Length: 111
Image (cartoon, rainbow, N blue to C red; front, side, top):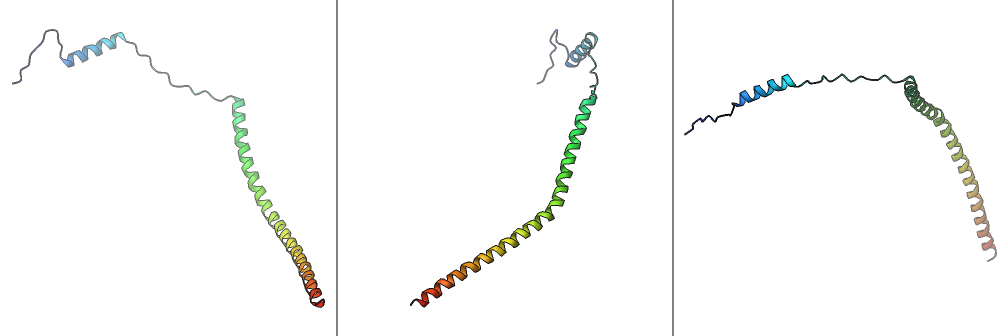
């Protein structure tokens, strides 16, 4: 039940593609894309970039060295403060207990 009918003025698909491609190729000039040119940074930009990188590096190194140097110093200082606070607390506690005992003994004598 299939019958092929030719219509006048109708080209075959392959003929239409070839003729369109041929006319486009003869009438169209396609510009070639130029390769992107990478602009080199200026001396000022380069100096700024190097200084920024160097600053980050110095900041990290300084932070590390300060922590390394200050950690034992701060630990000793904290130990000293704790030791002094314990001594003061013990002295105050002895005074409070001595007063409480003296008050209690005075009450027992007065009875």
